[in-house]
Length: 179
Length: 179
DNA sequence: AGAGACATGTAAGTTGTTACATGATTTG
DNA sequence: CAAATCATGTAACAACTTACATGTCTCT
Image (cartoon, rainbow over all chains, first blue to last red):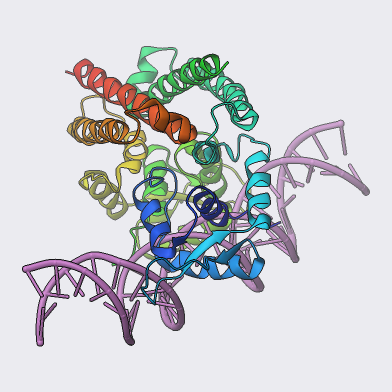
């Protein structure tokens, strides 16, 4: 099975939030808003939009407020919206966990069950990851001599552990606060 | 200019630390040790090793301790070592900052000036990033209504800010501790 | 009217992925 | 001795990047 494509889902998420976007608008969103999580150049976006058009996930917006002839604006279709929801509901695993933040971006409702589910799954995954990292640190760096021999490795492992501690802590606080 | 390739440098870093590695050994390192930062499949690694061999960065290890005929083991050459050092010394910018952790992994000496330099640059970059994120939060979510309208976006922005706070804090503590 | 941004599109090249293949070695 | 793992290699394909290209609009 080929690797699942993310880009169309991201575009759907953007169009779901802001209708009547042009390819350029989408490119700008990639650079400013979600640039932290995902990036795409215009030479990816324009062909992708055409593909999504033929797939029926988006349609060319009919209302033409501005008169700029070259601008093409798109709206999400029902089929596209269904596809977006299906993607958001896909189970999160250790492999695709990097997408969680991206998915959160597209959930606007504070009380969405999907949001709570993503957060709970993340708590689970990152708690596991944290204990794995701690175990690894025990194995590799229980003695000072080992730290001196691989100091850089020791640093990034320590860094990863702190990052995950902070991460799990944040997730739990956010979950508790959304009750 | 074509995008700089990372893989050969990572392989050099591994070989610099553990001589006499096979392609398989390298693949295993990718899966276990540095899997957090970088990944590569064997179908990338084997052709890359051949390229590096013709480039003179690595050589086939002569000492054959095991007798398994099919295993090919490699060592780093002087030229390869020079290339590795040059890569480690390349200035770190906001664009290539993701490589910093990877580079740290290959620095073994606690008192290496390169290490201190990387950490200092990171403090600078991430302090800037943090203040940019805080500013963005001010702009977008100064009112509660804005939070309710884009709750997912608010969450990941908050998350990013905490991550960077923790990151900068760790960097400064690590720098202070290495004096 | 020229400069610079806006808006879209295409082409060439690289990288990385999955899948296909083959033989050797170990393990039950 | 069959099955699984080890070790290497190749082929087909998908994805993404840089660069090339063209025309429009806005502002001074």
